[in-house]
Image (cartoon, rainbow, N blue to C red):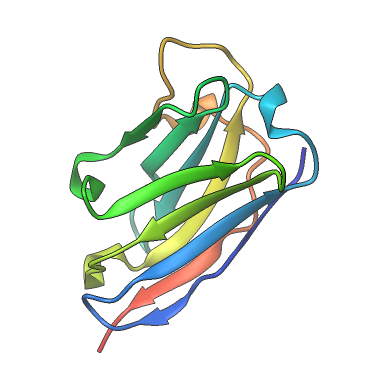
Length: 125
């Protein structure tokens, strides 16, 4: 499975951005899809994830209420809608797929494989 992120860019604080993760194959063969981000000098951190069996979603605490993850089965795409963006959201955003069945999707990078190349999101005035 290959994943390709797109949709990043420059946005002002308080603005919105929508990033997409396009899969080369059927996402339902994986247990979950996660969005992560990595800012310069910081570790990669989980932002949101969605299970493919029932589209259950989970968010990191700092993203709850601002970000929404969703899946388009027909297009094999997972989208991350980001609202009320802050300068601290600036990072490279990655999507990845977790092949293992778990009680829930998690924000541990080691759970995931098939990482995309990332898309840069910059929040600045």
